[in-house]
Amino acid sequence: MWLVFRKELMELLRDRKTLFFMIAMPILLFPLIFGAVAFFTSKAVEDAQSKVLHYVIEGAEYAPLLSEALRESSEFSELSGETGSDYKVLIREEKLDFVITVEANYAEPLLEGGQSKVVLIYNDAGLNLVQRRVQALIDKEVEDKRRLAFEQLSLSESQQQALLSPIVLEKQDVADKRENWGEKIGGLIPYIVFILCLQGAMYPATDLGAGEKERGTLETLLISPIPRHKLVLGKFLTIALAGVTSALITVTSMALWGLVLGQGMALTFVSEFMGAIGALDFVLMFLMLIPVVAIFASMLLSLSIYASSFKEAQSYMGGMMFLVILPIVLATLPGVTLDGGWAWVPITNVALAIKELIKGTMDYFALVGIFGSTLVIASAMIAFCVFWFNRERVLFR
Image (cartoon, rainbow, N blue to C red):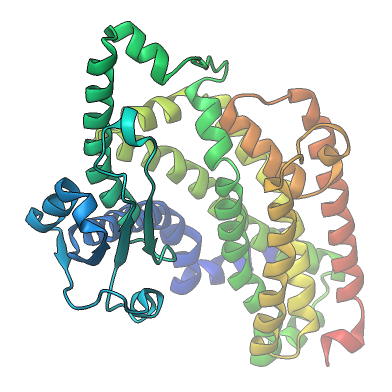
């Protein structure tokens, strides 16, 4: 078994593409994801904020200050000659960005004219910030109307505040920053980690099964005096080592890049959040990934042995990606927690546990169910892999 393991490991280390997916990809993926999301989000918001919006205002005579503010602003451009047109069609055709319709009592004092309504017609399907930019102009006039009304009523500042907000709901959140951020991003981390572990094991698994069939080296290996189960275990350990290496590098990369980005971008909450996750939590994340990787390795090796070609094995393993994603998605659904039976559901329980470790609310008694169920499934999959390897029809199909 160890002889086969050493042989397969040496061949694995010579494959640059496999090493890239095992080592380079986990290290580079986290900064690329965070950097790309931050860059494109900020660029989209900047473009939406700087875009000149074309508008039409109906009832401009009732809102002279608002109309003048729109005309003087460099952010807006009025389209003349469009009054009475089918505005919805023009907006859908992107010839017009928004239309404002003002009621007749808009310019009257608040205590005399009462509440006034402004209708904003626009397309809210994209990131255009139309409502926010128009609301900023209207808010100025709202403040002026309130100030004049308060002056007429001779109300003090405290009376004004009480009138605007008769009852104030003060929120006191018992959750700390780590728990809040862990709830928000805790479901994303297992998704990334599991996919990287699967990819780290996928390429060596394809080569050790279907690849040997195509090269014609499998027959030579089978006529050796090494028992079949030891051949399987040697190949399995190689694939599992690749997956565990990806897991270790992924967890380490997640911790290091979180701290680096937090310091480099002056995001104190990121550095505080990453610093709050203890070394024991990172160790437990890694240890829980080992039986998960064992499940992946045995399933991938079984598929690779069954496949008659390298391309066929890749198609099977592509479908396996969806089977892995499904239990991870279950862990993100509302009401799915590590309590009760979910602690015994393989893969889902590890995803939930990683989320709880990130939040700092982990119930360590749940580790019994997590490791127990995952090890049982991993052992069963390895046994199936040995059974599969002993079938001559599968080996030579």
